[in-house]
Image 1 (cartoon, rainbow, N blue to C red):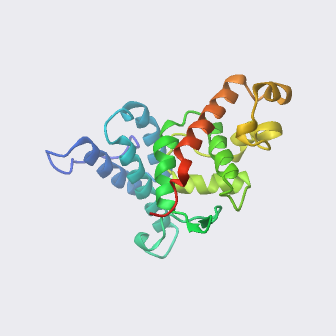
Image 2 (image 1 turned 30 degrees about the vertical axis):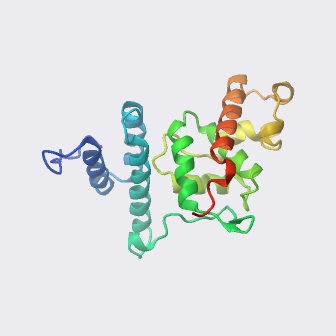
Length: 218
């Protein structure tokens, strides 16, 4: 992915595109590092997101990057580090254990794959908050958790970007009470009406995808 990196051979002459991409990610993590790989995947997402299987592959690549990152920062081997670690959410919902692997995949398939702006992450925080899933509601903690879960996301999660829309209205008002009139009354220079509608539509979509508590352990 870095220009100085040598050209590498394909795993074999019959390898599929997805196999080649997986192989390249593993190689370039070692040669170029995590940040370079993230930037390249962000660029390639615009080219390949319509390919069948891309969403599933994106989850797999997130796992590969996360395991590589953990293995670099820990004396433990990558496979001994829990991938679906949780630092901000409740472990149970109505007494039923939350399946964090399943929750991760649902969010990845319907939300992360469609990220366009950094402030989009506020919609996910808002829904998780409204579902009373968050124990730690700080945006800084949320950003750290999401970047750990989705290291290959097209847009990284930052509390600065979310704060641009969080205050003074959207971050303190449940999403089902949002109105365009109230938003305009509290609107700041960093906020746009298009941004409001995008966040509202994302919240509505996430609410449907997480309906019936699809994230509970199966």
